[in-house]
Image (cartoon, helix red, strand yellow):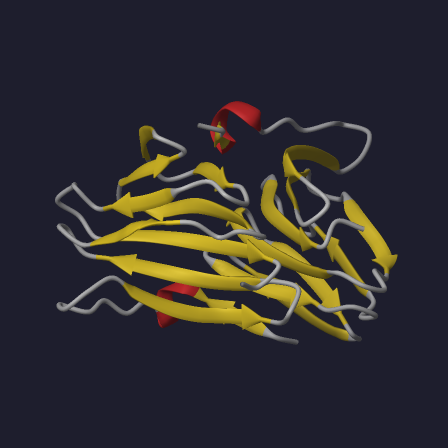
Length: 105
Length: 105
């Protein structure tokens, strides 16, 4: 069985937001975003994919379609095709976000 | 922004495993499975979809492609197209699983 543990896979980079690939196919991509305080992913758009974000730990500031919200552990949001989206860790603790995309861009 | 909180949405049924719909499109479906001790989802197959499971709380016994594993919070697995899969709560605590399917079956 293809089985992963976030605790063993999380890996932060001092240089930039680190994406850890968990599962991937042409249908979907599951990544773990490891985001230190001050790091971010700049605004961008996927023209044909859903992108779902689930906050595992820390706090993430998400900007989707021009709206901003701070999400805590246990909270989710989605960027739909064509929606501009960005995320930033403006908190003081490391941020872990589970990210599902479908289809893989 | 389309924003959800697991804590406010989780809902258990005494009768059977309860699926709470979070996001849905033809590209993907995100659900919260709320599983009381003794409840389960029977073995089945999706012919064309990836199905990713992330355990939020509790312990889940997953059987995928004939292999069985007990997953704890922070652990993930995937059932790929054509793979027979099932899950059960054989523990003593409620089980919450985030389930992401792509494409929507």
